[in-house]
Image 1 (tube, rainbow, N blue to C red):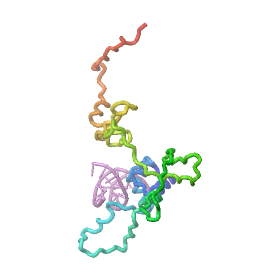
Image 2 (image 1 turned 45 degrees about the horizontal axis):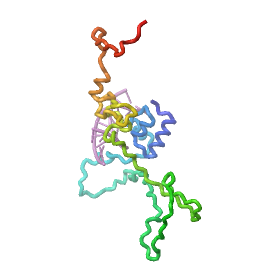
Image 3 (image 1 turned 90 degrees about the vertical axis):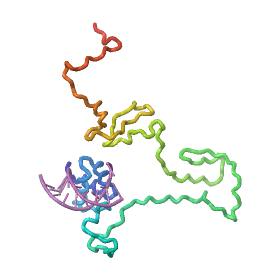
Image 4 (image 1 turned 180 degrees about the vertical axis):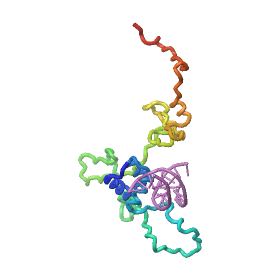
Length: 218
DNA sequence: CCCTGATTCGC
DNA sequence: GCGAATCAGG
């Protein structure tokens, strides 16, 4: 797969967005993680925090030695961590006890919950509109108990057995999940089922009689 | 083991 | 220039 201008642009963009070389390689397709890394370096893209980094040029660095800052080496920029801004929750509900504020008046107001957790205003209510609820943190849905601990479709990757167990649509449908026989999509046992040597015709077991007597002959 | 990026070196 | 092989840390 050639490094066309377009693919190089994609690589630059994804690399600068902080995607890992593996992710970029998978996204581009047709190239390995190493190819992406090699190309990125040849393009002079900014180095990323690497587990290897230093430690090879200095054969021996006593821990007590003066920490020489190595002016030659480019200053190591902080990793571009896209720190998610902590959503500052409007502290309306978190009001600490305020002496000047009397206890909240009882509000047996009947409200219903709209989609997304919005409080519906009662009909005819004259107060200011209720501000929308703050965005809620999304958490992964719990898997159904039938497939808890089983290998689901989303768990599949190149190193676990993809032999299906059960049938799609059934609540407990899942996949084998054992380590694959390297180079195959299945584990050794399921490779044995998936790939069978073809026997000479005379050695093949004749098919069992069909339960309904076989196709009608006229 | 898995992952990561850096480097090397034959092509 | 390319990228597999290798290294080495997390």
